[in-house]
Image 1 (cartoon, rainbow, N blue to C red):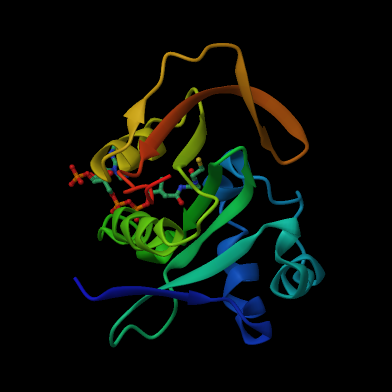
Image 2 (cartoon, protein in one colour):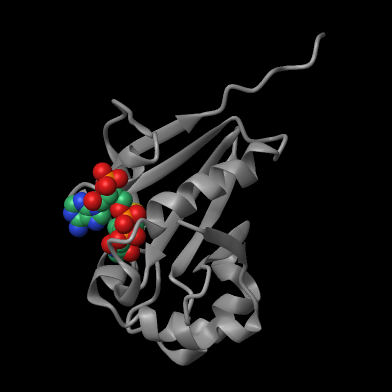
Amino acid sequence: MAFSIRPISAEDFDWIFEACQDPEIQKWTQIPRPYTQDHAISFTRDLGGDVAVFAIEKALAKRPFGVIGVHSVKSGLADIGYWVAPWARNQGAAKSAIKLLLDEVKSWPEVKMVEARIGEGNFASQKVVESAGFVRTEITGLSCRCGDTEISAVSYQYAFKKILPPL
Ligand SMILES: CC(C)(COP(=O)(O)OP(=O)(O)OC[C@H]1O[C@@H](n2cnc3c(N)ncnc32)[C@H](O)[C@@H]1OP(=O)(O)O)[C@@H](O)C(=O)NCCC(=O)NCCS
């Protein structure tokens, strides 16, 4: 499998720009539409306001596979987002990257749980998080932002079994 994640850097703007021309990424994620090279350059600098953003890579591959990150951490809940470039799909990249991100945020003291808010119609992404061990919650009335539009969403969560220090 040999996937890995690493923080994005200024050199990542070109393949991020190219990948983000994909209609599925434009439909289901928060990226601006249309997505310009300036958007990609800004994103590598300010992370789009996210807490952390990682490139998904695979050993020996010519180009990175995609992006995964943590949008925010609130009340112990880390809200994550991800996309895989059209040239890299159906090879297990998203599933592996989610597991690697779980390993990463597990050590963040403030994080007790991880959530993926996914558009109601985004069945591919729902399948991916289920594959990575997330459980669909019963929470209703949720939305997530796609481009500049709020759409109905479902919530999948992953709870860490953290051992709390004695009182
Ligand atoms: C959804 C997306 C991240 C999947 O990435 P991927 O790297 O191709 O997914 P993986 O190869 O890791 O697939 C993991 C599992 O999901 C399943 N899956 C992936 N795409 C699927 C699809 N289109 N339909 C059904 N199942 C799918 C795989 O079969 C696999 O199942 P398994 O573990 O039982 O074998 C990618 O298509 C994408 O970037 N879409 C556009 C952006 C997006 O939707 N981002 C998420 C916003 S919430």
